[in-house]
Image (cartoon, rainbow, N blue to C red):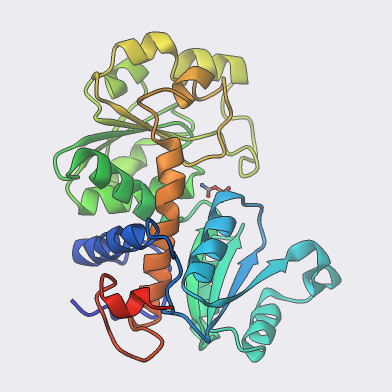
Length: 323
Ligand code: CP
């Protein structure tokens, strides 16, 4: 299948076949990452700008490393030392970056729709690295990649997403990806953070944690997004942990082969017991590792899925291995 999208803005608009194409491409890039020489020339001569206007550890560094591994020139935009601080608009900032030859702009922003806004007027490719509470498409792609890698399938699996769903872009992107690929998604957390309206996205909603986790093949835990909440959504952090946290007692009631996922950053002892986060069922760091291959695949595909010579190789093609 030929990849036709110029940007990666969300999961909602992708088909199941397109999601699978990213995952297949990422699988080959993961193999490239296991070679002695991990760099390939697919983006040689291209300029990638990381325009992160919200904090990030995993996503920003992973995109930076992905672009470096693809031999692009990479610039990290720093909000604090930028002219955004002097009142420059996002539009002017982005147009100036494009005037400096940006080929791909990766944006994280607190406003939902910011990447879609840039895509309306930029010639550069735009990648959404998280927009407000809307979507975080590469997180969902790396999460589904990890599930597929560990379980061998997605269709028919019971995936429980537990925590602050309302304010979570990770939840929305995961719901789109998982339901398109045939998983059964259950959402759980306080009623104030998990409204029944999510049933319209094809999910089961329950506010009883034991019910949500007993048959789960995957439990994906989300932190409380305090930075997006405008009012108190539950009485206290302590009460949240008692009622919805993944404790050792609760883990004992789950399937023995359940996978524990978390997009990070983790609030240890709040949504997840610290030992569970580091335990044998946790794939939290596998998710981070897989994010690199997934982001290489995304940058490769939106650039046209061609190498520096304009050829369209399979990424297993030896040409892509010669740097
Ligand atoms: N999962 C995630 O988006 O983490 P960062 O905020 O550190 O990028």
